[in-house]
Length: 68
Image (cartoon, rainbow, N blue to C red; front, side, top):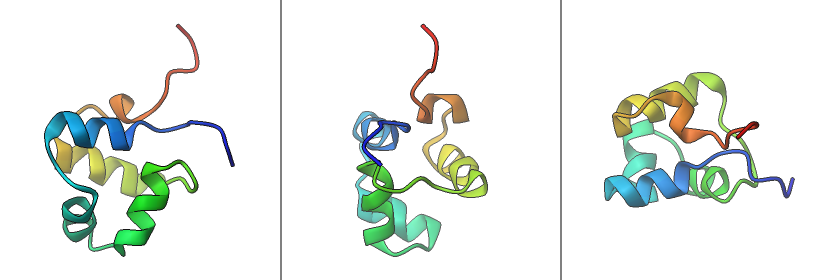
C-alpha cells in the first residue's frame, strides 16, 4: 500500500507527541503505530477514533481528503 491515506504522523508533529507516546496511550506495539504513521497499514476505525480523542482533534483531521 503506497497510497497516503492518513495524516497521523503530521498531526503528531503538530501536537508535539511522539509515536512511542501514542503507542503507549493506545496500548499498542510501537511498531504498529509506526506502520500506521508511515501509511504501511491503516488503523481500524475504532483505533482511529481513539487516536483522535488522544490528540484532541476531529477524526477527519487524521485522514487525507479525497476532494479539495
